[in-house]
Length: 289
Image (cartoon, rainbow, N blue to C red):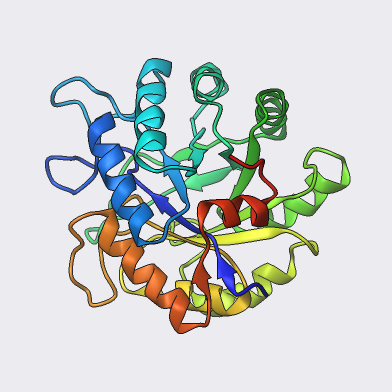
């Protein structure tokens, strides 16, 4: 286990309303939040892009000009930072994410590594939203991987349930995923793996030797136990307002900076120091800046 840990900040998500939550939208807001996270110890910025029209910032955008402006602003604000771009999209049409990948040329990009019934219920016994399938067929995954390879982008395989985790070794076996392989264990989605620290040793045991892994813990106070156990087991760490609005104290965060400060403290309490961007590049097998 390395005494260094790569910390990722998930700067903003999708659909959360910026009028109600501290989620950045504009390039200026994204860059400012990235800088706060960078100063607190984050070396990777995970980026979604939002609609820039007034009052429409709760919607996602696959406009390459929007993606380009946001990532250029982040890179200028955070020297040497690693950009990890979202590619998650429902349905077979992946032209929007591919256009953004080509424009941004991020070092890394999230790759949803399997399908999931994306469900959530409310206390009254009704669906929180109409049940949907977050579809990520092998055909779709292969198309993304081919284009990521063409653009020089390293995939970060997001796994929402145990079957998807186990599929990673099969993707390696058939030659879809070249080394080094990067895996995110996504915990806390209501119809996926729960955010329970006790699950981590079993999940990590399903990964091949040499796989770089991190946890993406979604929820409230329970996510901090997951972060602590991840640090103890040698995994990398991620948080941000995409994943939670709550600090370890239970207090709502004002933005990404306090969340990253808290996560860096968790790492240091377990004997691990946040990696600099240059150290993170070496650890993750990325090209030097």
